[in-house]
Length: 167
Image 1 (cartoon, one colour):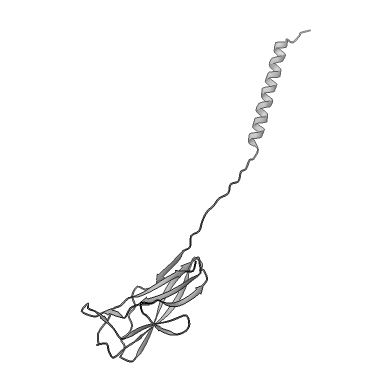
Image 2 (tube, rainbow, N blue to C red):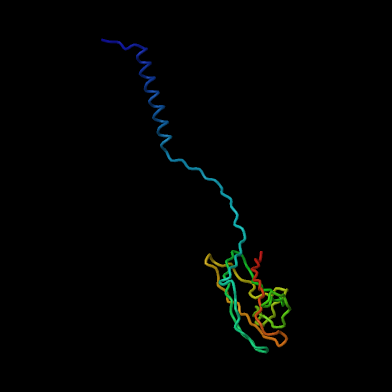
């Protein structure tokens, strides 16, 4: 009968011990593990106004007559908004001289009245809800009233459209 030495038994037990530790580590590492974190971000207010055309040419008008046109603007906004229009009674004539004109450019305001476009901005659209990503196409009715005080000719002036976010 052969006897197994203690030294040999010690090696066998040590080998089994190492194998069990390695197997338990492998089992722990193969298990799924998950962690979560909080993510913080801010969405800023945004209001974008685009004119569908950059120039408007009214048809010729006789003094005392009125001609109408419509300007379209595209609004994109993630907040409540309103649209304002302003301009001046100054215009550049054909030779480039800036003159005051008596003919009036008017805008149809949010109350349903024709209002002269002047240095004080007229509120055209008010209390509008945020739009989607496609935006909202708005028709802005404009009117030109010819006046006998203006000499015949072609005049050039500017109108400013302002999108005002309601924050």
